[in-house]
Image (cartoon, rainbow, N blue to C red):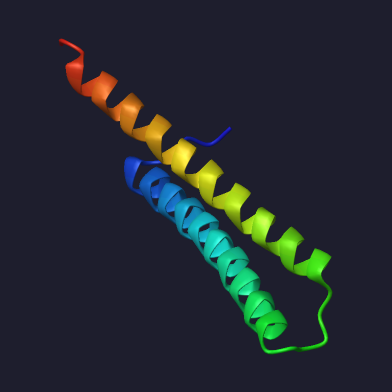
Length: 82
């Protein structure tokens, strides 16, 4: 298994983080689009709007929890004595 440099690991982590945030943004955007379409009387089923809304909500909450765990881990590392 090839070892990676800190720069490569940082670049990989940044890429994963960016992709994850983009997915959350896409879910939020899709939910907003369906909600607006429903509000304007468009041809969209209410259950589709509700599912998209819940999916966006769950992905946002999961992202917030992951962020909290990362911050908690960072703070724990900073408290370590060397």
